[in-house]
Image (spheres, rainbow, N blue to C red):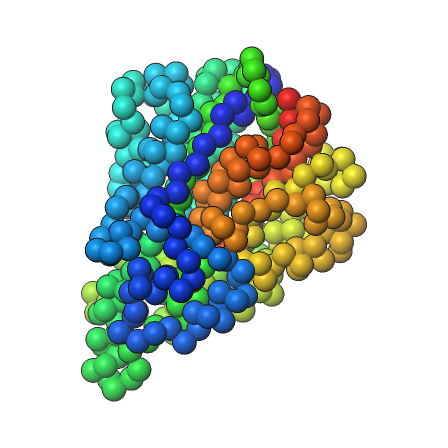
Length: 377
């Protein structure tokens, strides 16, 4: 097996940052009524600004998720002819078919035929793409690979997408507002993309990151659905959009993103930190004192101290002064978040050869987790 190195990291964030007091004007008011929970959620998540692929003046889309990914790959500064494997992850692709990977491939300038993989899921989809690129190099099948992940959450969070649902509620003389499980995520998610170039050689100048391992685990065998789109719980049953009538789809905004917040709060740390990391520690004989930096992707500042408690519960405490996340300034970009975190981290920290970096990406879709160990070279 070959060693694998991250040679280049890039990110792309569309347009200008949007502050908290601008969000509802850009996304629009659902039912022409201000959200009752927006301020509460923003206080809890600690996000101060984020980016949307929406023109704030015209409220028209400026980029698709595919276009965000293409721009991130372009920002790597290499030609599409220089790699032979492309792995693409996203939580919510622009279309059901074809796969998001081939859509990105199709928009890359001067791209030759190549291996392309499309990774689905929620936040761990970005790391699934990273792992495929890692294995492509590690096995020697490819010498250069690119992994990219993008999210364009704003496309599904705009107020227009909920019009059928609020109109139906008006007909029933109910308040024209959406449920908390939908409104919650409108103030949590944002847009962006990131990419990495992997090869079997270090950079001749500057830093590289050696990937020691990438470990993904799903607990869907134990846990129910928690974050979802294109489906709904009807009378306690989880029903996909294909098995719903048109009226049902419209009345519940079936394609919107939903979150069972109670289920999330009660289980995300236990499953994605305590259970998942305990397994990783044993598998790789990992020691907390060997970790120089910890790069966690958490969806909200609400979970920061709870994450620390989870580390302590398994005797793997990493002091918070070793942590880096850019959630407050870049927002929660889902599967692209770890790429965007890595890009800023590599660009702004005084890194030294031999330092170990542990990355953590949880997913609440049905509770999955990913850890990756890097070494500065």
